[in-house]
Length: 559
Image 1: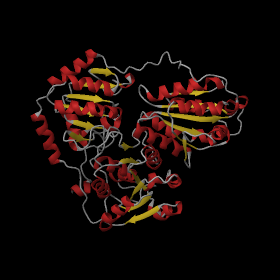
Image 2: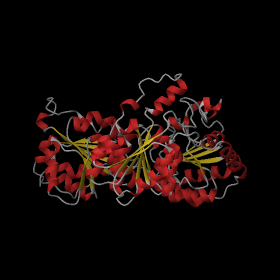
Image 3: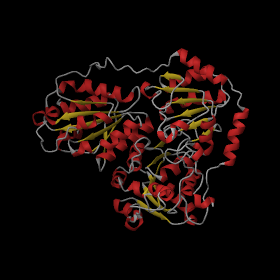
Image 4: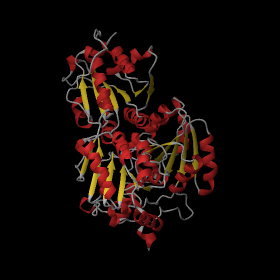
């Protein structure tokens, strides 16, 4: 067995069944070893960034660690955006990259790059393998680091000569991580303090983030015992079903009015598995001015108190802590508080389509009604992402897969590849925008090659829509470099050129039949919905503002 074969053996022992990647000169020995090996399916993407996002979609939707391969130099550097995205959104990934031979490192050899140096700030940990017999230990450690504590990406850079070298070590090795001991069990005294504070609260809210998906069952017990209102962040959508009557909505820049006002008026915030991102808090000096107690539950102690001061910090696994809170919780007297929240909801419903032009809202709602919400959803980044977040009522944990912290345009299509590979019998919908889709459009070929029946639902407004909206509202309609319509391709024909079904929907009348046609098609589909080109996503809190600055509709409509 050589080093390349040892890598595959170690991965199989970690339970890896799918790998996303692209071969090249410096990782060719690994692919050669894979050629005759069964047990691991490799998905060839058309770009390494696509492989990284596919591995993210796989990991987020399944809870398993995603694995991605790339060659040295440009191949490894093409992973950078995906690694940074995974780091920001706490996604467990293991990236294995080829590197030039050890004797050539530092000589500016062909396709050489200091990959460990480049990726150090955007990975949880990384390795440069110097001894072939270290491979089993390093891979074991990488999976432990990536998947435990606060999850994140780990990179292993393997020189080509190490891949060829004869392996004489053992796979029965112990990890050497003496300083890595994540706290999973919250301190009992802090949990008792939290329960006591909850009991005294009159206007509490539970804020649920992306770290709480595996706590879903415990959260349901907690909220149904206490009656507490629930607010889910963009990354937390689905951790508590959006259809649950206690879910008030999403907070922050494009959150619902009721959710933002509830945070502003709350006297207690119980935050589980979130980091108080600036898109949630806005102006920190004006965030939650009436709150007296902040209970912050997170497995990463560095996040607690980093942005919002925590009165009762609880370091621990979200599922473990939520279960303890649910066991000790009591019903709360919240009739007046709920009456106020319901009044806000009735006075400030989400905007609904008006006019004759096809709206992104109508498209999202049409697919939700046709499927009953029983689908995994991925998105790119932009207006379409916020329309999907607001109007797709996510019902299942890990069911809404999107780029949150980094906001990576082009994320949705390759992420849908990974989601569909992880869930071959499930419906996967990718809501995308014409700007976002074109950043990774080559991954349509991946859908076709592996016959992945993803439905790509393109909300095509002919603009970089979110930038246009900001230019409209804050730059006096100076639309600088956001026009796409005149140079966009015919997306349906482009899909057909890749070998998949293409559909064009130009108006409201065509929508119902198109939805049926798209969902009934057994293979991948790209549907080009020609939506209103100047629609805006509302509500909206301007950058640096607070809930008191919320805009519920375009100022011209208000007049």
